Length: 262
Image 1 (cartoon, rainbow, N blue to C red):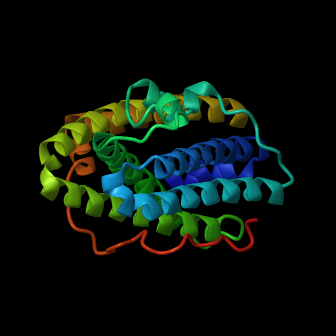
Image 2: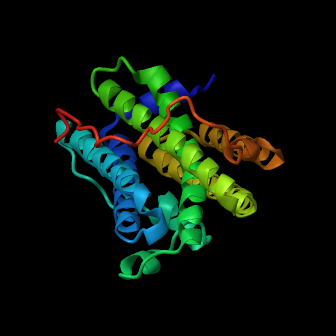
Image 3: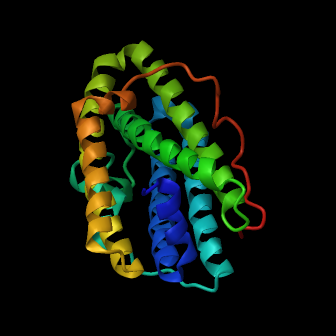
């Protein structure tokens, strides 16, 4: 019987698959760090109170990228180029989800609608990140190589998700409720499709690196399609609900460091 733990253990134990996994993760986190840093620099005047939180969000994502690169160095491995079909962030941008990089490269202040869009997109993608890291934490928190990294990143992703809930509720109370719900639904429906595409691409690459038999690859692909079926049928709704989080002001302080992951 295939299990998430068993599959990931295979990926972890093989240098080539581990290198691809960490390279994909490091690239995505670093991209998120850049995006949040640019958003923090371009926050409109009425939302300047958010600047420090957005900057911390970016610093956390950049830290995660460094952690994954440090895990590679610990194994004596170099990053590899990320196959474009596994680039979650780029594929979401192509679907029009999130703020376009062309806009972020310009030195023009963002609008309040841009900030609402950024938060709605982040609320959806941080839900995915939080769930994925909790899964890894459940299975590998005690692992001698990746346990501390997984636990640290999982805590950060939970903070990011809490921050999105709190800020979106604040903006909904300020009159943006309908816009927020529309953007959340649009983002969630696009995200589940992109997640399916990326998951199938990653499993295909891992299968080649690990020499999986065709029956195993087919079973894993069926699992990805099954997850998409559940999400398309209504599971996506978990990504669009808003509730006040237990962790209030989750990004209100300075970014935490990652000792041992320089």
